[in-house]
Image (cartoon, rainbow, N blue to C red; front, side):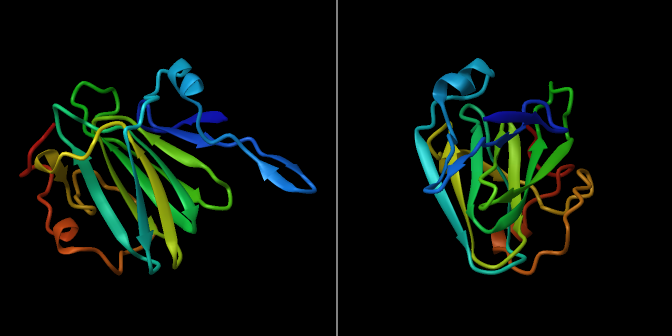
Length: 180
């Protein structure tokens, strides 16, 4: 695996190193020892999938507040998405900065998002599915979010979303909402 830094401290693109032959290919996508050696979360007690029917579906920006903030390892297993990490860690050198990566099921890349960052994505094609490894078990009372188009963040989404749920479209703006 190759770990590529992004504009958000601690957020990394995880690229697989494929070994191909006439049978197909093999690639390691996760190793707890390798992740721990890079200072990353290496225990994931919960995994989730997100299946999205249509291009232009937006989910986010979501995070889990203290005392159980979540690190996430997110991978597209089908389709392509524009995946975003937003740094909400007040003491971070990249506080309120964002980073984006195109996750692609064919490339098998992943995005490591540190605890204390919000996460969101926009599907770039129909029929996308994401697989998440989560460092914490979901705690609904700690679930939070900010609006995807909040001017405080100036995230450069590739295009306007077509589909999102009521919760995601009605989150508070950062200046009026809860801050980590």
